[in-house]
Image (cartoon, rainbow, N blue to C red):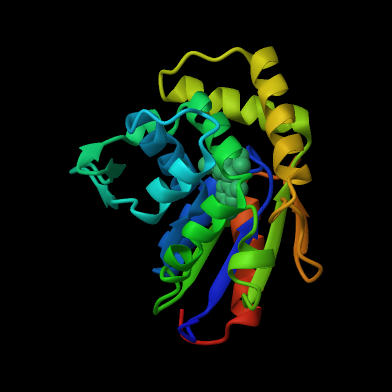
Length: 228
Ligand code: C5P
């Protein structure tokens, strides 16, 4: 690791990790690693290459040669390119998340993108969002947080998020998909989604985003002294 501070934020989908991690990175002026996006990109790249959904070695090959670029449009909105093509909207589809969760269960795919993820740890610091940031990718992170929320609340948040993006969503179907994805992520043999022994568990069911961000900022200031 580079010696710069690393904050690992893990937990299930819909617990607020993405929003909280982005807000923290922006307030601290640090780098952000959205590791879920990398698994989503592997799934998309596999589809684009015409791979069968169960082609493990094909997906590992695609993962090793992933050409991605993260950027922003003129309005400051995040954009993602895969092999030179803009895939931002496709990346966020629920179907892409489900496909990502299937390829993420394969050890060869996980090891293919391990070093790429570690390269995000650069000055002045990194906020890393995922499922195994504190357990596998950054085991020496300065602060490890495991964000959770009740399954109902997480489904409700996902539903709201998708509607805000103008995407259609059915709450009951989302609840089922979230439960399926949680089960697959938590029970896979390699790097299952689990709180690291030294993680601080924060239940966000009854907390607003501002409250979560300010609690975490206080923890970061305590653990990572320095000007910020
Ligand atoms: O967080 P997001 O919904 O984008 O993640 C998509 C999927 O990628 C997750 O359901 C999980 O299976 C996988 N993932 C992972 N390890 C990470 C981040 C995401 O296995 N560090």
